[in-house]
Image 1: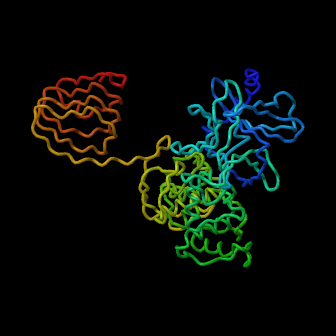
Image 2 (image 1 turned 60 degrees about the vertical axis):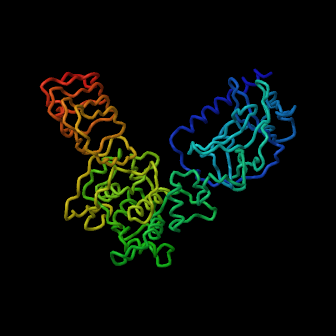
Image 3 (image 1 turned 180 degrees about the horizontal axis):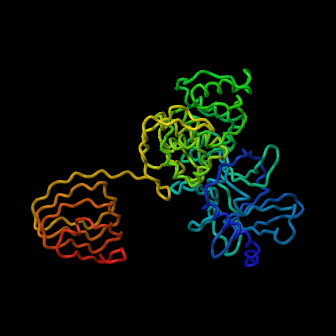
Length: 530
């Protein structure tokens, strides 16, 4: 019977394989809907270790929907062996089964952890254990949810007994019960940090949102969520930017917009955002408060209000879709880019300038602007655009509005170097270690292995008098272009370079031109002879 069961449950193996691969794909957005949970009769469910492959097991959950026919039977103890009877008849409407992450997930403290935790069955000595591992932190210890209390015979299904504090519940959307089965706990372990809102636990912007919530700059909704994926309207952005930059003074007098009545809930926020230079209206005298705001307009507003716009737009070459940025927005967005205000999810080199800004986008932009102003600590995120050390801001003389060409600055900005082909996390340049003059010797110092990038420029090496040049057997990193001259003592022998892992610069530095005889070169990585 065991081989037959394994063959009939083969589709489960395929489904779990697909689910495992999905965990390695691009980052996912947070769940947009805040789901609830419904208590269920635990006797209507069986949590099983299902055999597959050679000695491997996966999680399978069976549910008895009615009493027409039993969906499984149990026998024995330590472990309890389960016979899935539903395979012997058409179980439609009688039984239900959950075979992968589309059918079950982890829920703790009233929050979904389906995008953060992965359930699996592993063997530990003479037991099968149901664990949940953190997909975002490999160093986090797994959650131990249950075990079989013994190993079943080969090819048999074993019942998993849940540990105290864990139970099964069903997902709900409002009053509607859904098919998802939760492995549920009312608490979370101390090493898992809960976010400020119930729907941001899996959000890419949760750290930005939590930090702003702690300062009461952003707030949530009555359902306890922040709704990070919801679009932001112009009036909502005005309200958020006013809370974040309440310390700034007005730059201009107020104005009356045709479509903003005095009793409108956002009228004061709109006026303040206008007076501080963050936002303006349209040529027809309207503000359009309920219009969704694009990402580029958020960045332009922040750059204008904080006077960060730059005349030098070379920073925009970092973005693969820079051609979509209109001319009136290039200066402000370039300035925001230089100041590390831009945050792009899920692809850091895709600005998506015309895309509608979400609440998560705006929270990240505002937080980074506060970091630039020295009012918030730095948050590490792979989605922050970092083109290198920011150049001094070169603000335009007047804020830039959509469709209005920027006014030329009084002084030219400092040009910056083009960004690398792929975004990388910058590493600090190592500080040169002061050298101590060595005593005279007949042999120069030997540099057998350089494991880190050399500081730029290279400090002079104090070489004692010697009849032999220095030997550099192995360079693991490319030398700077061009190589600085090394103070070599007079010698009748050229330097010996047995192994170079990177090509030499053209032309060769004085190190290889000083001697009468050509240097000995072994395993050079460039194709032609010198």
